[in-house]
Length: 135
Image (cartoon, rainbow, N blue to C red; front, top):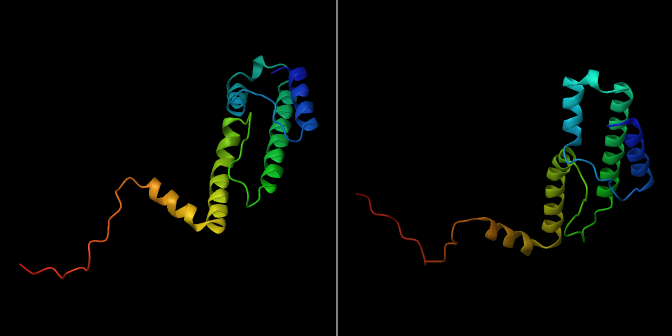
């Protein structure tokens, strides 16, 4: 977490709008823990925190602009080098969005997904129902 390295990462994030720079998977959580418990050991703590927040903001902006380009023809999304926090923020939105696309694009795909997702066996048609006798 040196100022020079974080500056390089921030510049690389800004220069490549479609690629995420490789960072530790839990870089947001690790930086929070370090600032909470080892602030005195970090030189230029204010600048380091500012750079990490800038990197996070640039990466979130990339995610947002990438999500805007999703169309009805999208069947999968690959986001390489995302951190744990970024994945957890994007996951619910992506799942709902892709389900909506599938639902509006092809109703048969949703029915197949529902059938394969359930663990119970399908009930076959057993003929007309009869009323039960009282005991």
